[in-house]
Figure 1 (cartoon, each protein chain N blue to C red):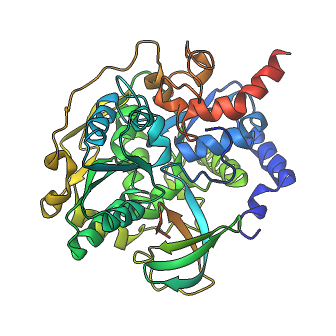
Figure 2 (cartoon, chains in turn cyan, green):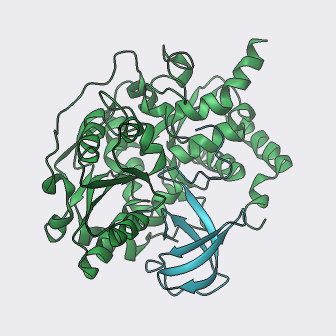
Length: 64
Length: 371
C-alpha cells in the first residue's frame, strides 16, 4: 500500500482526471495529471469527446 | 495544475477551517461521516483532521470497495483461480485481501495464473489473446466501477467472446447507509456524500437521508478545499435548520448523474436479493449480479464455487471501523499484528481503507500528540 501518490493504479476505486489527446482503435488516448499516457480509454458513456476535453476515468472507462 | 492547485491552497484552507470553527455551537459534539474511502484517504493524506476543532469528529464510512468484501467471496475467487484452465484477473488491491486460508497473491505464488489489471477492459484483452483459456474477472466496486464492468461485458457479448466471465461483487452505496442510519450505535449530524458515485447516480438516491432521517448531505470533491467547504456547507445547513442534498462538486457531478452509465448498468446487472458485507452482515438488495441476458458471462454459474460464509477473524475489528463505531487505532491489532504488509483485515489492505489511510498518514499526528 504505502503512499500511492495522487492516485493508485492498483486501487479498485480511484477516479483519475485525464485529458484527451487523440483517439485509437479501442477508444481515446489520454494523458493524466502526472504526464502518463493511457491508451484505449473507453469514452462511450461521455461522448461526444474531442481532443483537449478533460475526463474523469474509473477503471479505464470515462464516467464524466 | 488546473482544477487541482486551486483546491489545495493552504492559506485558503486555514480560512475555511476558521469559518468551520466559527460555525460550531460551543459545547456540542458534531459527528460527520465521510461515506467514501477516497475521502478518508484525502482527509488523512492532507491532514484535514488536524485543521478541525476537537468537537468536530469525522467518522469513516463503508465506502471502500475492497474493505467490504467478505472472506467467503475471496475464497470463491481463489477456488476459481486455482483451476488450471483459468486466467484469473482482478484489481491490484484485491490480491492481498485475506481469504479464510490464503490471499489471491498466495494462490499466485502456488502456481495459479492470477494477473493484476487496471480495468476490466484489460481482462477482456487477455481473453481475446488467449482463446484457449478461460479468463475470469473478479469485479468489485461501487457505482463508480460498475459501469466499467458493464461496458466490458457489453463489448464481450457483441464480439461473441465466449472465454470471458465475471465474478460479480459490485455493491451499491445506499443500502448500507440506510443500515447505518438505522443503527443505534451511531449518531451522525451529517454526511459528506461520495462525489464519484454521484457522478454516475446523481444526487437523487441520497434524498432519503434528509427526507427520512433529517440529516444533511453534501456531495463533495476529493481535494482538501473540497472537503473543508463541504464540511462548512453541512454546518451551515445545521445552523440554518435546513436539511437537503447539496452539491459542492458541481464541476464534475451533474444533478441526474450519467444516464448512459445507468442504462448500461440496467442492461447488464440486476439486484441480488441479499449480499453479505464485511462487518455489516447481510443487507437486502445491496449488490449486483449479472442479468438474465448476461448469464452466460457469470463465472459463478460457469464454475463451481464453494459459496461458503466465513466468519471474520476474531481479532479483527474491521466491522466496527466500517460502521464508524471505533477509530482504526482503537482496534486491538492495528499497527501490530495488522499492517499494510501483513493485513488481517480488509481496511488495512486498500489505500482507501480507513486503517491503511490512518496507518500511512494519521499515525504521525498521534505520535506528535503523545510527545
